[in-house]
Length: 109
Image 1 (cartoon, helix red, strand yellow):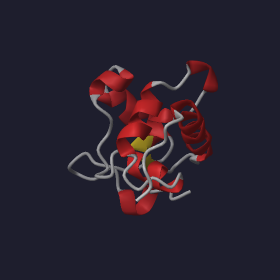
Image 2 (tube, rainbow, N blue to C red):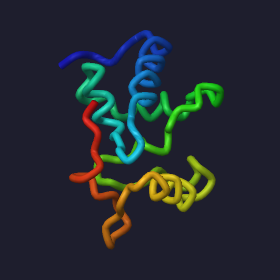
Image 3 (tube, rainbow, N blue to C red):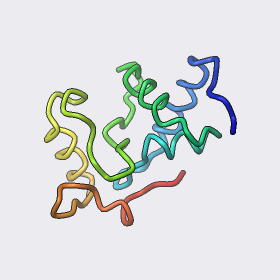
């Protein structure tokens, strides 16, 4: 297994490059982004990168979700309904339990 990157800034920039490519109507997971970068257990560090994302990058951060299809904790966007509304406006569908239909909307890069 590859160890986590020591150059966080370079890793974070690579995370942002991937997030910028997530198309409308699709979502990616923290762990999936880590895997794309060669770190199969990198979900937590991807989360750190997302929390540090510069506002000027205009990244579609709302398209990064948990592997279970759950949305980010409410403190990330100010309210969980903000992220849900953003995703719904892009055509993302939700199951009765409130999770995203990952089979339909997961983007694998």
